[in-house]
Length: 509
Image (cartoon, rainbow, N blue to C red; front, top):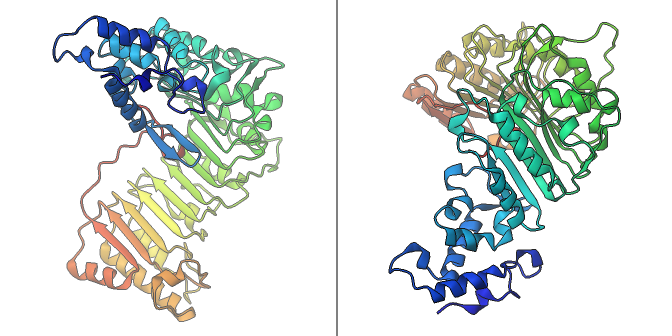
């Protein structure tokens, strides 16, 4: 017997939110089922209360708790995404799902070969009623290769529908193939208001030149609660550089990513203008610069008048010798700095982060260039052929009287897929540094030393190796006996590196 409570319009998923109540059309669906007996075992004959229980379970399984509350999970495959997958089973399931507006607060619009039709997009927004929205415009992860000449027109139509509901959006994420397909901040969001928007991401895989540049003297887009902003370089320069600088008005902005500008012509982007704009952000804590081509390091008319305070910084695939300039402008000591596939050999500024991670550095790079005077605690190297015995010898060399060590504060060493070093030499380096550290300060348990400052050199207290060279049993026993924490696995890890860190934990595939 059908549970009438589920069909009672006075009930809702959350009784405090009237917009979450089941639609009145559930009554019509219910009565149509009663009037028309369905064949036995036919999927459309399931009672509405059972369907609603199943759908509610799927809904809750698609949600996760975060520090800011319950949100949609963003790592589910498109093929099984709720509510779109069950809505495709049959018309009755779709009708039932469409009656619960909360189910449709994640609007996913595909712009690949199985692109979402405009009428369907409008239905999704309609079914969500007036609830706040998380909108994702994306492709299936298997369709980021090849050519799609129609992607731009598909994204344009999706953007047009999105903007009509932008005042309800909590997050907007574009993840497309071409930079020219991305919406224009100047054109598509001009004079719009998004009071609830906390995340805006415009991401693409390939920079194909972008749209023709536009300039508006009095551009405006009001998003007072925006906390996370990820823009392609052209959109960033359109709205965040010079007098337009949108960042000045984003008082709650915590993270910023600027990406995708390759050398399609001799002219690159101006590093000085980019960093000057970043400096004017009132509350920024995390900065990512990714896959960018710069035309020159700095104009000859400028002086070093930029000072940027950050908590964390991620630098990937930056062309030219720009790393030193960027590090030089970061005045504070970020907690974490990640550097991937950048030229570090000519870096003449020392890193000052407490944690430093390198990824994908070739054998001809010199790790000592940015690390010689670094005093941080945690060093991580992933797929770095330049971590070899010469670097270990440099870490052992304290000068004529063992008073001047490189990386003098390092206590934790994480290695992933680094095989060009000798475990015996690593052991010798660790032994020497621990011996000298113990001469100045005595300790019993390595855990005691985590927050200690050592005058000459700090002891290595943690080593973690994944995909390393073979380790003899005797050496393994020495590490396990002497270090507070030790792990060594010789199996090489297959770690794909598409998008790192803070900007891509929420990729929809």
